[in-house]
Length: 473
Image (cartoon, rainbow, N blue to C red; front, top):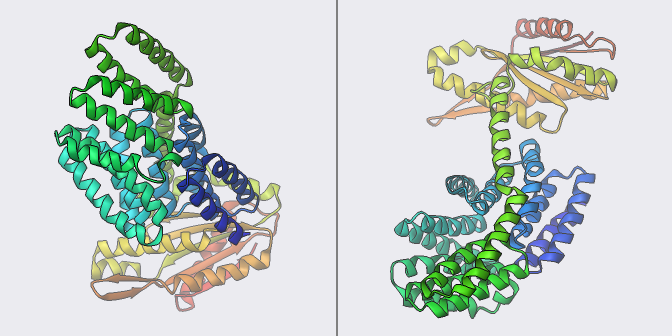
């Protein structure tokens, strides 16, 4: 199934590159259902991302916004660095469509950070091309050209492995660069870039990119004071955008067309375009996209504050407040489903020596390494990780199989002992002692389980440290 979904992702990407968007959307929706049914989160997130990008290419902003909350939740729960890179790109597109410029730039730059870290050439091309457009909107023409040239250089690399996609990206880059040259008065270069777009052998399959080029011609002729030519191209751009329902672009070009019609004093046409513009604005207001996006942002900030109350800022795992406010509910769920529960208490052997000998900065790195190791090892398990205080951590694990828990604890301890902090060409191995207590499917009292696990921790220390003791209650 994984191989099938992987192939499906590639097929959808090829369809998007060729402009076969409706077919690609149907495949993405079917594949996403299969991925969810099989708990295949890796390919499911890829398909979710592709689905949202297809809605963007189709001009369906409403669908993009309606999906983003679920997509974000999946990224938070199962996402990797790549998924967060993709998420920030999607958010940059949404903020751009509703006109929140600062957030658009912020999201684009975050996506670039992740893409640089991952050396994802495809994403770097797209993001720097988008950044060029954003810098144009901000009136920063030099910065816009710099972003475009960076995108071009990455696109040369992309062309070596994905030539068809590189062709499409070249069109996007040229459209954005054309605006810069037009605004700086270099009309010949601007027109040459737009000519390259409309003469491309793939442009007929990419309506959104063709709209951008037609808009570019209108922009070019308006700045040359060839206003009747500008009207012609703006109208072509509007007709094409309306043909596939791209309301944000239609509204933007209508606004530019009205400006030219006022200069020409074409009163009858002004009335018709104004009426269509007002109707479109009212429709978009009824969709309430901006409010939906702002609500998403508000809820995200609210969740961050709530998370800050429950999570340790140094290590990113849960803090003691979770024990008081949430853990009882977690244990009740285990009791209802009659799962075994295990409370694990562990701390770092001779942790004070790290701080005294090497400084608190290295001590912090050791704590972060332990937290990261626990998260990585427990990623696929039904478990919570809590920093109890100092160098002491608690893991609460629930599972249907008691023997699995017993073996898992041994493997966890062995894994943690393989971790090392690397600093200034030195290596500091992580040594921990661990105590664990499993219940008997009757005792779900945290305090009793914790006390026994804590006693087992000290038995492990008395047995020579870097050791573990497991018992049942």
